[in-house]
Image (cartoon, rainbow, N blue to C red; front, side, top):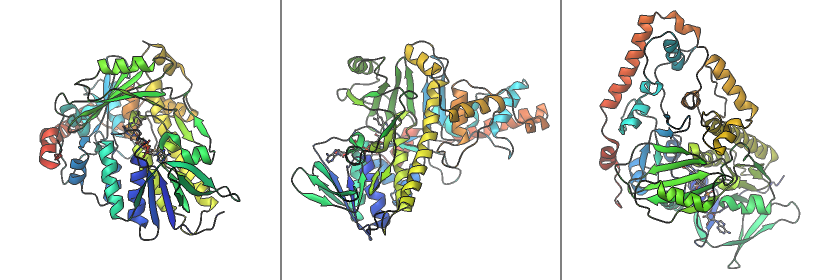
Length: 497
Ligand SMILES: Cc1cc2nc3c(=O)[nH]c(=O)nc-3n(C[C@H](O)[C@H](O)[C@H](O)COP(=O)(O)OP(=O)(O)OC[C@H]3O[C@@H](n4cnc5c(N)ncnc54)[C@H](O)[C@@H]3O)c2cc1C
């Protein structure tokens, strides 16, 4: 392999992926390397990607970003989960919250007690009523507490986030170069990337290149010819139309995901506006009809014309090849349903820094990186397919297709195990914990046939009391909280709102 020391790192592209990468790589390795990021003002970023999941908090901690400043810079709001509306059936809703319900026993998680109580005829509330994050989301309450705080994430303005991370990266020594990449130059001997030629004629040489050029995948796809695994037979949505609207009320601390006859619609509240979009499959809806549908079905006045974005769900066959690592949309895209793309960017950068090839690229590093990316993305893929496949919706060709499609064996196994035993196991690189799988499985209408026998060691009276006390303690935690918007005003109101 290429044993050349890695001194000069070049990031191609300055969207969320490019600037997140620049920030973490410059913060961790800035003193050892030269880092250049090339982006073109003439080529817009994808302009969406505004909902995150809780691990982003760790990313910001590593970067030493203050939360209040970050939130006010990106017009951020807090996110306790996602409200899935009409997914199980047209008139049924559930919340996939970031919290954990109740208290678990080492042998059996809390839901076994809930299912057991239900089956034994003991009165129980909705499953989410035992989880403080779920209740807080429903009541639009939020606060960060010094102890026993919530599991939460953020909604952010993608453009402002990239701008903010640019400042952070430049502080740690990253250099931005404006220019349009016209050609990727390969080494005639080993086929690795040697340099990038800009339209201006300037040539940027490097030892390691990070492809953050979005769906174009200029380096990994076009130049290095790495193929793409197309998963649209499992995740058939291939288009989105996005638009911003004015806020109609106070921002809620959750993302809304509303199932539609040909896909679903999102609503992401920020401090000063809402992001909206319709994700759909073009076999069932034309782009023109999608724009009209979104315009007619958003809350609040449109701030811009709906914009169409095309994509193919799937994953790059290798995320790292030779001296090129793909991060962000260039490495693949599942779809935005569970807000996992920014997280996958974070994971890929962390993995790259951990495996950083300072004294030359080795195949063992490449293989490890690629295997970890693959395992992680496949498990997220299965989780997303679950939402589409396990549904009672029968009102459109789109939903009938999703219900009837065959799914990966790994997902069939999880569904069967849960149906039969109530058990869910998290594997090493699974992003989503048991509690997430559980909330979505039950939210989509699955209910285990049996529950763990440890539940039956409790009498009806003690099981009933246990359930009542658990519900009370979640409620008490939430009752003490301020409204979400009051907390934002106090903690991190944007100066630009
Ligand atoms: C509809 C939709 C909704 C989404 N919602 C979410 C969400 O809620 N949560 C989430 O986590 N993720 C979401 N995502 C994914 C998220 O938007 C992306 O993962 C994230 O924005 C990173 O994009 P990127 O930086 O890889 O690409 P881009 O934003 O497309 O950036 C590409 C960069 O490359 C540059 N570039 C391209 N070609 C050239 C060239 N020739 N020369 C120089 N520069 C070039 C561009 O100027 C730009 O700076 C969503 C995606 C879509 C499509």
